[in-house]
Image (cartoon, rainbow over all chains, first blue to last red; front, side, top):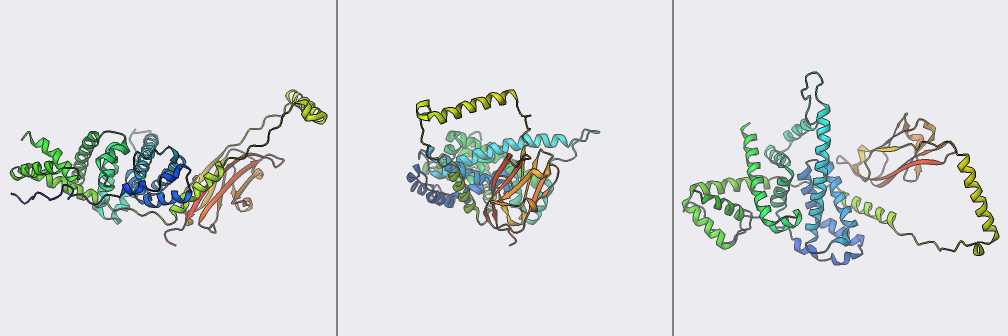
Length: 209
Length: 216
């Protein structure tokens, strides 16, 4: 034996999960949505949705806008909510979709933006992302390791970023993640494994530098 | 060590809190005799700890109120209007006065077709700040818009039903209104461009929400 004892419970390594099941209650009355009922849903979910979005987009103001958009979108389409999953799963799904939309839009804008910064004489790029200096300054203030981990999560490809955020920052189950991402549990597992390999490589590289 | 590949999946399953008792037992029995898997277990566990150490971020005060205010304003805007009572427009119901009015209207249309007014180019108004439905801190509020018209005296700026044009700086194609007296809460800005008779020909209205600034 080498110091690793068989634990009593299989879930010993994970923290407590959100009580998403409890959110099913109180939703059935939303066929004709009452704003007061909806406010309770916002109150229960705003922090987790905001933190998911913030980890995804990496910008506080954008995250605020997208969180607001998530709840407005949910309110407008609440009659389409079929209660096959919990309301928080449904909100995560809306949030992730909005993040993906925002990410694709940003990617297009960034490619135009960086293109215009090429030096016409040398053809070399003068600057890459305008926000890079700001991020460096912020990192000095914040705890360095946490900032690095957050930054490297944000730098992962979108599908890998989603699974890391949902599993380790939001502590959701494979089943809930599959429901949110619209894929099988097998896909969640393999995506998560690849995402962790990539993140580990990136972090090791940063530490070496 | 080819079988260790299978155990990598089991390590992930276990550390993700998804392994059942049988899988947990199998994994730990294997790790008793496999140093490579023990090392891998520790590596993945420390990666999980690093990810989970990322702190959560707080929402600003007033965020929820801003969301609810926005939803309420949406609800008001989309509330169905009671349908107007419809009446038949046949001549017997309209009466002779109605028939005469219809004939006059037909003449007017024919006259307009043959003597059209020169078409006015409708100016476009682009919102610059705050963005539509934005949540902004009190100290950063500038209301600004760009527009495509040259006649400055025909631009009006209305904030929460109050005409603030006098206090607005209007350049050739850009306007900016700055106020440090805006209260927190929901606001509605309108930029209007009128023709020479004062009739609006282009208008943009947008809502935004002010929250207390962090330093206050």
